[in-house]
Length: 325
Image (cartoon, rainbow, N blue to C red; front, side, top):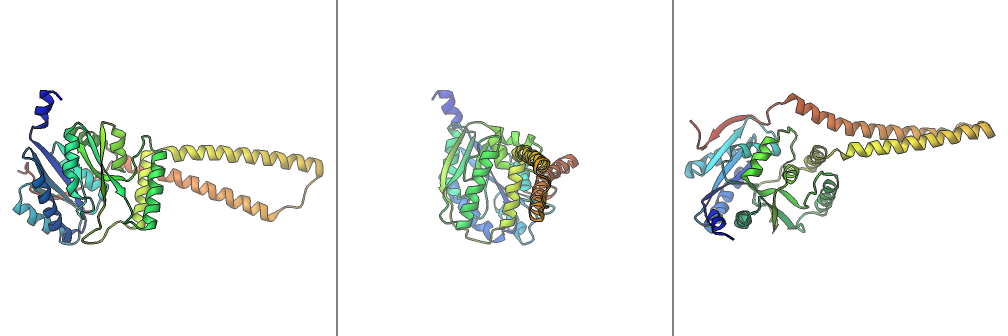
């Protein structure tokens, strides 16, 4: 390593932690304590700032963060006007974060803050993206492990770029990556696929996800299903192409069957009509048509959301931002 590179690595830097919160009043204090322990592990050339995004909480989350901001000028808060969802809250945090690098992280401590120094070290070594990858999912239920494995395998096959398995939003992003993500103006966002699409030099830090200590997860299986659909349909057009092939294949089968019926009738005469086989064919092709229309509808709905060009989120108020008038 040259002197210039060594000197660059010693320059003071700011790392912004973007923390979307929704009804997390009980976890704010514990999270702040954990981050303070991380600060003690960092050298004097690295400063952590906390950017909380209150995604329309109905409990005392806002008050808890405001109390923390009153004690620590490195804490800021963006209050959204309602619940816009985690992806929109992440974009809000990216827009307001001013660090040389940004780390989205959950407040429930299942994204362990104690690996942040390792992520920063890999970033200082040259990586533009440092993903935290879950090395062990044994604490999850069998259903969660099964669905997660299926999702990561499917999204990897369908995406334009290979998707790393067991990697979520908890990753360090260099400022150049953050600026690029902010230029990508999609309303239906799947941040982890957008990060992969951006390219750049990437590295990983493996970790074991601890149990949630406070509160309850806001992600039901229904929400995770919708999240998976957003991930698939916003990052790939393969489902549309697949149905083109399926439609062609079924059309060829129908043509061959019609040819068979024509010559069979011409040579042997008309058979008695088969009610059961007719109903089966009608139901099968009707179901396939509805499924294909549903997939097209998913894409049309997303096109509709993009065409309206409504804002990604609406900010109701902010606390602790350095550029406030």
